[in-house]
Length: 433
Ligand SMILES: Cc1cc2nc3c(=O)[nH]c(=O)nc-3n(C[C@H](O)[C@H](O)[C@H](O)COP(=O)(O)OP(=O)(O)OC[C@H]3O[C@@H](n4cnc5c(N)ncnc54)[C@H](O)[C@@H]3O)c2cc1C
Image (tube, rainbow, N blue to C red; front, side):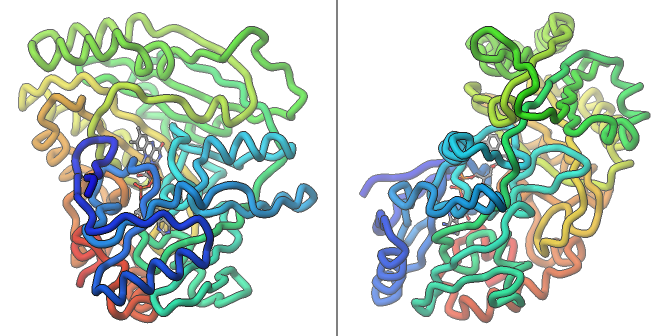
């Protein structure tokens, strides 16, 4: 049996069996066979979760062959995607129809199902995470049905099923509300950190998609503002668009070399970060949205990300700065800050509140545990909710107070999966047995 590991190399498992269904009926059959054999079932996407959420000790369902666009309505923008479709493939197919995802995160190699199931989000005060773009799903259930769930079909399951952590069944297709193709104009420039922190609740709404990166040991924020423009707006004329931060720093072999150097000689890190910040410069670019939202991350890292109330960003980052310096930690990877609209998805990190997201990273060769634990303690103290796909230490009993509809989600889980066909150790921790 071949073993599986995730992108960040934090989890690995050798499944008892791997199945590769290519149709919804084959998914139903695979679930039935697993139940006959007394094995749990877990679909995987691209393995880009840092947590053990996709670990499948029983039957691993590889949905690579259940991919592509099932239906497109270019008038309404409603598009149905097979569950294993990767976001980058979906974006390319949508573009052919003059359509696009309303918003995306930093990368697009994930499967649509994996991304929505963990609450994947981008940035934008007027925009929610990927799960808010869903209009219906089809779920293969533990008892062998293909259940259509939407605001009008099995509606009582809808607020749970659109962000289900893979705990409710296997998604076989997802209907997404897309928007007409649009251009994003990106503006990146460095600014003094304190000015950005003091102004964050206001400035996060000053462009359509605002974010910034802070390199520990420096006082500089690298800000990025993306503005939505019509599809026929001018695009950067020559070649693929290069952004300073993603393409020329994080996507660059030189950064790997610098991170290795920092790992071997921690005393060099503040100098490396100051250098990285100093060479940052103002950059403007424009292209179709999917080419601006998502980039490639070549240098591997470990990550923890929490959502907090909008006004918590300044206090959290100042406290994090103090803790990093007090402990003498030397951190190469930057802290990323984003913001989204509130939503009504029960297990969404943005449930019921406009949210800022604070993500801390450590290079894969560095010990991430003390830094991430310290960051988590600060974020928890600010009413934080952890990203389901990124490292955290929370368990069901202390997640319940953070999510007003937590017990409603558990009731849906009990109804759809009373025998825990879709559980794994991570889900037992965060949802209970
Ligand atoms: C480099 C990098 C950058 C990232 N950037 C961002 C970002 O900008 N924003 C953000 O929010 N997150 C980000 N993430 C986190 C990532 O988006 C999530 O962890 C996402 O879940 C990964 O998708 P995947 O396809 O790899 O899913 P996997 O990790 O393979 O699976 C995740 C979960 O989805 C479930 N699942 C998969 N398919 C199905 C299905 N058909 N039915 C039911 N459940 C299913 C799995 O069982 C598992 O529970 C990033 C991660 C990495 C490594």
